[in-house]
Length: 179
Image (cartoon, rainbow, N blue to C red):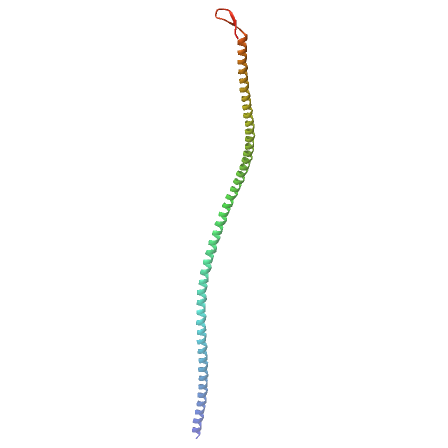
């Protein structure tokens, strides 16, 4: 019986060790399953992080491309702005020159207009004087013709009167009076 008892005791010890090992094994399995779950969750999280990282990287590349496009557009706008500013300066300079030329031409025009007005006034005055002179000349000419006519008439009258009163010589050498 002792041996049986010892066998049972050894068996009980073995059973107890076995139970402890089984419990340790079950605990290790449970721990391993938890670790595997944790690893699987960590792998999934890592995959999500990698996908997010790739998406962010892709979006960053797209954003950089957009930034480059915007930089090019801003550069083109700046270039266009400078060209427009230069063109504006050239046009402003041309406008200033045209204004100066216009002012000069306007001054000349005004002075010519004033001179034209003065000359027109002088011309009117001279035309009036010329008409007066022509009228005076016409009057004098008319008076002269009248005087000439009167002189002619007077001469004729004198001639007639003098012819009758003057002694005339006859062809024979004698004098005769005519009436």
